[in-house]
Length: 637
Image 1: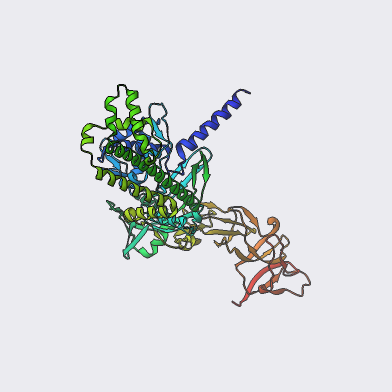
Image 2: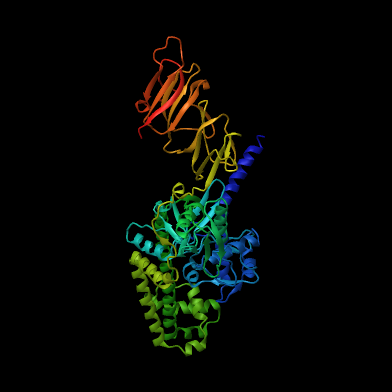
């Protein structure tokens, strides 16, 4: 046991770390999970401008991804349906209906222009060996757009989960410009499915959003669903509507799914019901309104980090700025190298240094002649001369030397000098350069990704307020049963699913319970009605104890446990004579039990004078003598 426990601890820790970093949680830098990164890298290597069979892409990606073709194919379809980085051709399924894609051998894909421009730069990409060591794969892609917030993602790892909602491409770029200018940013999600969103509780990515379907009412009997909430499909939405209708939340005549390229679900209400009445019920009881929580967890520095949207945008913008700096420095180095090469060629050819190698007998002597010939021009060098530079000069062919254009060479050098100056200016004003880059992206691609989800503010539909009073509960005094399946007609009440019922028996016991098919109440019921769980119930009770002494009490019943038996009369030894819901102003007359020598035969009491007391209290004693009969004399109100 002492050997197994540390072994299990170590193995479980390694497994958990692997699932978190290499499977479920996206990397904050390029917004990709490993499978997505490998798919995009494979497409970049295969890219020739033409479409590729998805089956071929999956096969090539399997050389990097050791988890089978199914996981790669599913991830590719999801990524393609996001529409940012993979252009698709063929049936890739539908985010609206939930239908799956066609087989990989029938569909094709390639990189989008946006992906080619913003996701790849082999010269600045760090590579690592693949799982079998035969190939190399990128550690992260040098993304220059906020991918993790564009795509959105979900992932469940060991002990943690992430749920990042997708945001609008153009709004994210505009937010990055604000970040670069030191301003505060606030962005909210945007969903492919469209719909209407209340983001008042989004809390910068740490809260939730509520999303509604877009509903139209063309006439009083018809509702048309044009857009659906994120995380639903037309099938799941229709299923939720049918389920609510079966439970009696509302009545429908038919539901017809006419969805093709765009969502269109036609709902026809039943006879006697109207679209305006059903509309709030759809929001209350179906997936026409959903609440979506956000929990932004991403990998940073090889460990999971919890972010807000603004924090993540700041990090990604700083990374973009650094990426542009590295690209400019790389471009500057390439220009300097090209300028150095052209300068050496110009000196080598214009000064006929190549003539010096004609009498050299060995390779070493040839190289030395070039070094000696170039030495007087050393002040013109861009950097120190190397053996590689000499080898490159010696590779120049005679035809090129004879056709050498001095003016063109000088113009090329001048152009390179101007390009170098431009690079240096951009590096000197890196923030402005980054803003200009983001603006150019926004101008080029922004119109292709308009906002699809309308931002609005709406109140949560109160289910209790819109619930239909369509549950009929009957009480049968003969059997003692009450419920929707009971046929008795002694007492009938119509309630909603949120109402409670109260039944008070003659022995002073009472129960509070929910409407059901059948519920047994032991004892003779003297009061059966609706109980308000929020406001409670006021009861005025007149009862006699074992010795027939009369008491009255006014109580306010609030707290309760469903179906539990409570006592209005202590010990259940008395008998309820009268019970009135609420506060009343009745005057009662009590006729005393006849006794020898009795002078006073009755007494009166006004119920309005009663003070509230606890449910367990005895209440007010109405008379000193036993009561034989009780009558109501006058009803004031």
